[in-house]
Length: 154
Image: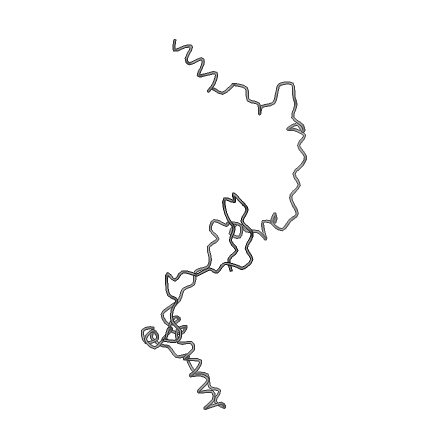
């Protein structure tokens, strides 16, 4: 009884010994393995190894270059408008002086305290404010039985 069962399962499940992808004994490969055409190297720039190193082609490790900012750099970025105002004022008062001075180093804490990025006139964006859409005057006429009506929005 089990023999009949496994024969029925084998007819439906098991793979044939002969696969369709294999060549029949009476067919031949063309071109035959010994008569392959000689390899011709491509003449494009990408095929030249000296001008196409692996690190340029490796997209998995192609990360952006990291930038390192010190506290002094951040303080300079925060106080840039203030230092520009100071430099223009000194240039107006003493236009003939052309001495080069060392850059002013400012502590980050004092730069953060003096910087006022937002004020009553320039407020930060309010989170969670939904955008209100307005429907366009030109609307397509809804067809009878249309499942997804289309609305034009401005």
